Each structure stands twice: as C-alpha cells, then as structure tokens.
Image 1 (cartoon, rainbow, N blue to C red):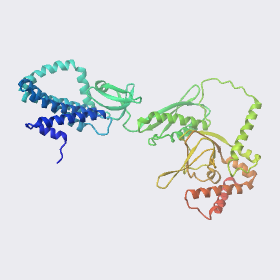
Image 2 (image 1 turned 180 degrees about the vertical axis):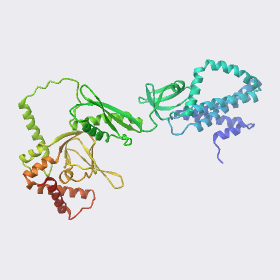
Image 3 (image 1 turned 135 degrees about the horizontal axis):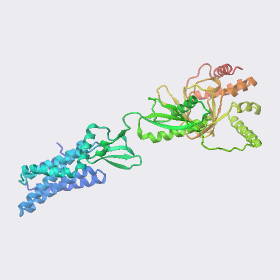
Length: 501
C-alpha cells in the first residue's frame, strides 16, 4: 500500500534504529526542497508547515551528536519533537480549513485551533520529555492571563469579535460589502481584522471590533437596487419620457427584469423635471459597468427621441435666412443620394424622392443598443449612414445564430422594408456593434408617394419580394405558395391594404 512522505516520517520518528538518522536526514532535505518549491509557486502557507517538519527532523538527527551534554541533548530532542508536531498540526489544519481554488476565505477558526493545539503540544512535550511539572504552570497562568489580558484588551476584542462574525455570518468571503467609506469584496476574517479588496485592488484591513460595532452593508444578498438621477425639460410629457427611458434600460446587460426597472418623476427644478431611474443588479461587481452603460445608452435614446437635457445657461442664437436655406438644400441632396442606394428606390425621380425626404429622420444608436428586435411589430425602414450593426436570428430551440454584419459599405446597407411595406413582424434582431447613425423612414412618406404615383407599387413590390426570396434561401427556410411570384403577389396585396392605393 502506498504511503505519503508524512506518514513515513511519523513512523520513523517512533523507531530507534541505527539507520533512522540517515533516513530522517534524507526526509528533512526532501521536505525542505518541497517547501522551497511550494514557496516559489506562492503556496506560502503550506510551505511553512513543511519547513517546520523538515527542521524537526533535522534537529532530531543532530541530537546523537550531543551525548556528552545530556541536558542539551534532551532540550534539542524536545525542540525537534515540538517543531515536528507543530508542522504536522499546521499541515493538517490547512488541509481541512483552506478551501481549494478559493481566493477568499476566513482563517480565524484555523488560526485559533492552531494556537490552542500548539500550546497543548508544548505542554505535553515539556511534561513527558523534559519532566516539567505542568500543574504549577497552569496555576500561575491565571495571574499571567489576567495581566496579559489587561494589556491586550484591543487584541482580544478583535479575536472575540472575529469569532462572533464567523458565527453570525453577516457576510461570506467573496461578498461585496460597504463599511463606512470602503467598498470591496471580502477576502476573509483573521484573528485581528477582516480584509476587503476594493475596486482599485487595494487591500483594506478593518479591525474586527470596529466591524462588529458599526453599520455594514452587504450587497451580495440578492438583487441590489441602484439609481441614476437626471433632469429633463418641461416641454416633454413625463409619460413619454418614462417610456423612452424604460426602453433604453431594457437593453443594458446585467439589469434584472424581476424586480422591473422604474422611472420616477421626482421633483420640479429650476430648469428641468428631475427623474430617478431605479434598477436592480444581481452581481454588484458589475455596478460601475452597468451605470456607465445606462448613462451612455440614455444619451443616445434621448437624442434619438429629440428629448433635450437642459443647461442652466442662457444661449444667444443669431439666425440668418440664406445659409439655413442652403444647408437645408444640401441636406436634402445628401438624403436623396442615400435613398438612391436602396434598390427599390433607385429608379425614383428627384420629385418622387423629395416626397420621402420630408419624412426621413436621422437617429444615433450607441454600441450594444438594439435597433429592432425579432418578433416585434414595426412600421419603419432603416438605412445605415455610419457604423456597423449585427444581425442575429433566434431559433425555436432558443439558440441565437449570427447571420451578418451590415455597414454603409455593404451591398444592401438597409433593413426593415418587410415591416414597413407589408406590416410583417421583425424577422431578426439588429444590434449596433459600434456607434451607428441611421436614416429612419416611416409609412407616412410612402403613403404620400403611392397616392401620387400608384404605378410605383408593383415594381417596388417585385424588388422587395425578390430580395426576401433570396434571404429565405440563405436562411434555409421553406417558401410558401408558388415561390417568388406568389410572394410578390401577397406583398402587393398587403401594400395596397396598408397604403390604400
């Protein structure tokens, strides 16, 4: 049967034989080298126990050299036995109370048991090996204990407070907590203090006695609420602002859906109505990242919906008529050039395109925001002017499949024509992978176009039907009816119902 080096060392320590010194010397060197190897791998705790065992074996080997001095030899043998047993106790307790693979854990019970067992070993060895009478020592220890206890009141208070914290367990190693101005992750409880590691990777040692007397906040007991406060102008209805903000909060990762986020109109300020966005997160470690994503996403959402964040300043505007007219004309030319990039709008005349230009809106989306979501209803069409978006499709099994990336350089830098023209639900989720600027077109402009030029419906429907057929082939989805022709007929019928032409 196999035996560990520690079991062999214990057995040899109880044997008296001429070869014991040689074997103990070899084991002492082996344990010392083992300890050095562990120390280089930053296993400092266990290397200390191995060094004690190695030193105890080495001293035991040296005791026969002091036969001429029996008293010194006896003391050296007692020291060797004490060191060996202390190292053994330390190794056993560390194996039992030091969790593997865990960076954060409390060591107070292990340390107290180690001190107690070391004291017992020292007294037993003194009594059996050195012949010291322990009873008088125990009697005198009461007086010494009183003196030491009076001088170490603060240390003893930290020890007992640490034990109380370990028993009550107001927090666990790894929990995020706040104590006064310190916020961090609990590393563990020691005899003197509790260590937390802050977001800046600073190790803060808090005395256990202070921790047990003051208020401590634990952020790891479930979903924790956080909030952002901001002011918006009086010209926007609060209910519309709540709708826009809640839609933006829904896109933020790590924000819990239960409890749901809240938007509260809180106060009337001098320049704005103050709103509070309250949301819940389950992992407090992501608190700063969530707040950053929320504040960033709100800027884009408010900007897209033309909701102004007012400044408490006075602005002087100088208006000139001619430059504004020139800028408007230049803007229309740019928009018309963008519209001609769409295949089913490419053949329209300038007059026909100007009918659509008046209903075009320019929007900005931040990286990570969803422009449209699969399964939702929609009535708008998008052309990408700047940035890149990801197209994903969710399957029936719940898995999400990445389909494509769309940018201004793509052959088809647009999406959403099926929802705009035929009232279909969104067949994919489009999410910004970078900051994105898009042109949004709604049904109002197309309704005006089809009423003025109803003959445009058929060629436009044919182009859209052909593209949808190609997309079905790429996605390996079955066609309905008689292929592209049937899809075109159904699309035209739906367009005539929606736009009444």
